[in-house]
Length: 144
Image (tube, rainbow, N blue to C red; front, side, top):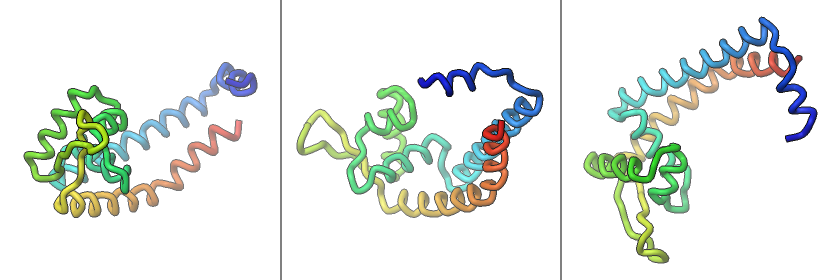
C-alpha cells in the first residue's frame, strides 16, 4: 500500500463523511434488497441468481464448481449443494471436464438463460437509475 493511500486512511473522519458512508451503505443495501426481491419474483433465491450469473459471466468458457464457489465466496461443498438444487430445478447441467476428470463443469439451461436475461435487464435498469446517487456519494468522499 502506498504511503499516500495509507495517510488518507488514517486521517480523521468528519461527521459529513460518516453520513456519506452511511448513505452509501444504505444505497448498497437498498440495491441488494431490490436484487433479492427481483430474484424471488423470477422464481429464484438470491444465491441461485448469483450462481447462474456467475456461470454466465464465465462465457464462453465453462464454469467449474470451484469457480462458482470463489465467485460467491462460499465453501466448495456449499457450492456443490447449490448446484445440486439448480440441477433439480432444471436451471443448470453438469458435465465432467475432458481435460481433468475431477473437474465438474456447470452450464446454464435455456430456462436459466431466459430467467437470467430478464433479471439482468431489470438489474441493469436499476443500476442506471441509482447511478447518480452512487456517483454523488463517491465524489463526496473523494472531494476530501
